[in-house]
Each structure stands twice: as structure tokens, then as C-alpha cells.
Length: 150
Image (cartoon, rainbow, N blue to C red; front, side, top):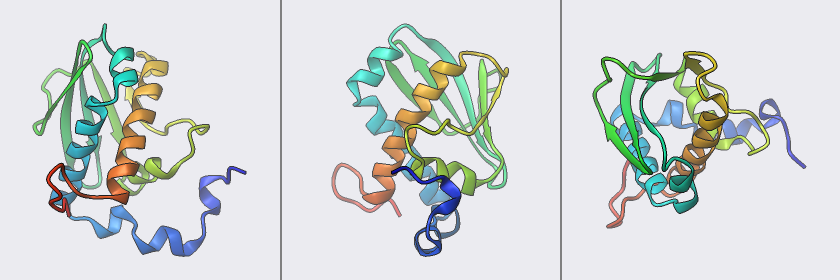
């Protein structure tokens, strides 16, 4: 049975809420690691193999911005914001951003996309893959050599 997001037990939302327990530096490292894992996901790379797009990702309340270039099946992450992105993805709060990692696959991804109708279905698939990888990293926050990301 899939529960709506608002019905999670209080303990599970407060125990290790990444929006309140992570530093911005740790959040950046975890996000970068999620993109590394995405790059290893062959089915996801197959879906973006024909795409050439520059995206800007923003978490407003933390003032975090990064650029993701999707280039023929590859992800390139840049810590600096793109000056002229094709698409901008915005989450008003870090809490909303990190809650996406714990939502079920049946629930639509909550994000503001500009321009609004630009490849919405493509981005929903992309973001589901990203948040699946992010969930994995949040559960096991270590890199390839076993160093902690936090």
C-alpha cells in the first residue's frame, strides 16, 4: 500500500531529514554522487542518448545552484550556474527537494520547470531516476572508495 507523503510517521521525517541534518557542502557532495550513479544507469542513459540540453537546478532557500549538461547519454555536472540554460528546475526549499527522494514512483515529481511545458514527460523520467539514485546515496552516503560524503 502506498501512503501519501503527508502521512509518514513523525519519527521518520525528523530522525534524518537531510534538509535539516546536512550542511550545504555535504548536500553538494551527495547530489554529485547521485549524478555519478545516474551516469552508470544504462537504461536511463539510453533514454537521454539523443538529448543535448543544458539544465540549471536550483534549491532556493539554500541558494544552491548547479548546471547539468545532458550530452548524448552522458551527464556533466558543473557547480556554477549556467548563464543561458535551456531548462531551469527549481525547488523552493531543500526540504521539498529531499522529500522527492522518499516519494513513491507513482507520485509525480514536484518541481517548477521553466519553460513550463518543455519536455515535461522527459524530465519526470529523468528526475525519477535522479531521486532514486539520491535515495540510495542518502541511505549509504559513501563514495567509491568508502569515504563518507557527510
